[in-house]
Image (cartoon, rainbow, N blue to C red; front, side):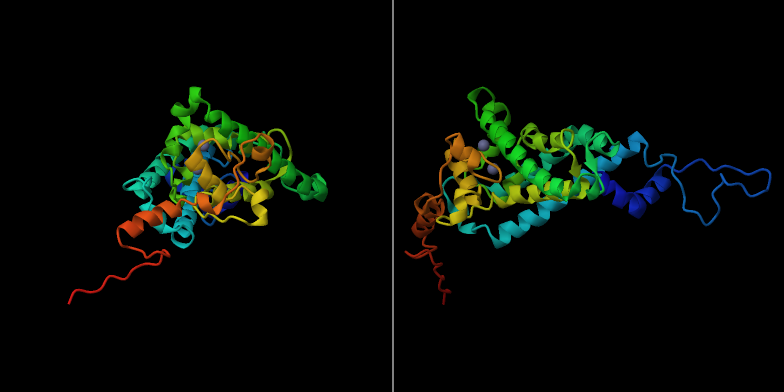
Length: 314
Ligand SMILES: [Zn+2]
Ligand SMILES: [Zn+2]
């Protein structure tokens, strides 16, 4: 988060705070130039300097709200229009107005998650985490090692958080809203109970208070996971690829939404394989098969699934 402030403070936030919370003007009664009095050419100042805690809180909430929404709209739209097979919308378990419901649910969750995450981001910008700037401080080797440790840490913890969320004693309170979507679209990426989104993001935020992480690397990995979360909801049932043994693909997550108690992972399948919850994608499990049955019954596609052009009425 301090990277975002580092960029946005001089670019726009300094001006915005100077406009909305201007510093009191000091009159120079001596008529002599004073170092404390800003000259007419110096930029306007705010009563809230960059390290003002209230200013930091507001900036973080604005940045996280805009950042998360922007990533969601851009990448969900790209995924929905270019990857997601919209024939899946004919699946018997696809809800009426589902896309709209997924978007509304996502947009409602984001502000609450941001508010709950605020203490972590605030601690980061106030220098309480192990985020660092110069790669040389810990060396290039640590940069590589910390990336691997970060991935394993997140994969392991998110696996167990997600799996425990499926425990009957908590499932209906926290995780059930995300499983409303049996056939999810990319718009379902953030469509969950705010507490669900928050607890699943906790490993990311805690990591930088346990291990040193280079701050640009951390920001990149943090953005990438947002995109990955959208990507695994695109319903693409690629099967038979050698990578599916190792990567928790969209096909794996599609099966998680259909069968609930399989494929809890985030990036990789190792935790699912090790803890016995891995279900490999198979062509016969593709929900598109059911969707095409409905489309055939409605006369929309032929036996091979190709669209049937309706003849124009004479
Ligand atoms: Zn999901
Ligand atoms: Zn789940």
